[in-house]
Image 1 (cartoon, one colour):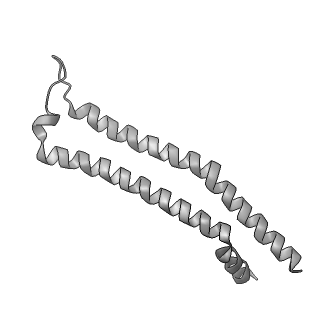
Image 2 (image 1 turned 90 degrees about the vertical axis):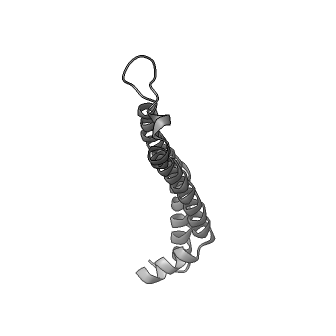
Length: 110
């Protein structure tokens, strides 16, 4: 019974749509995060003078707020993913479960 249910869910058009949207969204955010993170690392490796520029008369350099920006970007895209997952992906997932359960009941299976 469990294998049958898994097969029904995997074959459902809404499930395929959910997977496509979730995968595309996840990969997009992953590429963005990798670009920001490795961009920062490459900047540290190849343009230290740029990041070492002092901001004002104190000890703060440009690298500190840029590094902090990388951390804030990570938090922001994580929050964006969670918000979209809770709003869109969970709704699609619930719709698939309800549709499959409805079809199972119509077929006379418990």
